[in-house]
Image (cartoon, rainbow, N blue to C red; front, side, top):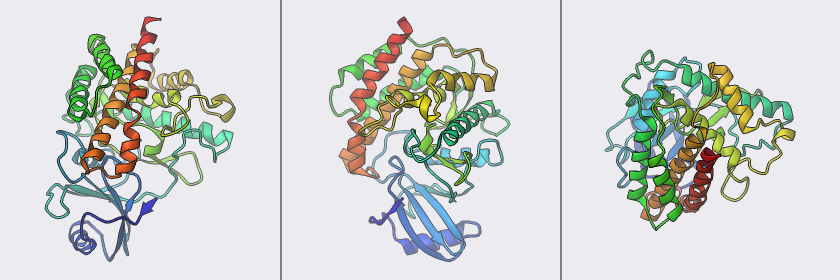
Length: 346
């Protein structure tokens, strides 16, 4: 959904810039901001030559390494033609001068975005197909060879959880707006329970969830995976655990989880079945350290949402009202991370 909100740049200047720089772009007509795109402001651009999506960094002071649209552009370019469908990345402008911040332009992909993971508008067989498509695409992503994609330098191989725990702990401290004892306890538990590095390295998405995908209008088929801002070389189980948080999150309020939903009746697999399908596709016997992976995922999401809240309070969030609402979830996510950590002791 696009909304008529004030733009941070002049539409006419944007049209001139895109006509000059984007291959095939012709006849600029309009630009409107999508209501979504909390991390990076995202806009629908319409021209005689078609529809495009422009994604830019937020204006103002940003946390170091955050809002990495350059990484999004690079990874989508690398994935074009692979078994993981992505929009065509057309042009990257790293110079902040034209619009006030760096941005890139990609093709607009027609299809459906499902905001509710319970998929209330679909029938049983369609829900089965949608979840199987997500599982298949995730396994395909992790089976790709980063070196063959020219992404061998896209991150540091090895010790992923150790590095990411340190990174997001630092990000959280920089965006902290009050004392959260359970978040402190979760960070302490993660720091003292780091698993041994098992040598697994894959291209990871970093935000693998149903509303970051565009599905075909008729079939349960993914047409494009979006939002690669957090992608890197990392541990594949992190992506799997991140998506499986949705099975545990509440299906109410600001959350779009699956807890309390009759998944069997709807055709949605259980967490265990979803993990088993992923393992079957990748030839794995199981997932070691699963409670740690889940606890880490809850922690990382809490740190991300704390950053969203901080930007909202600072006045440079894409959607300040929504950002503040999202920030209220941090204590609950920390509690759920601690609950997952206790599964390691059973």
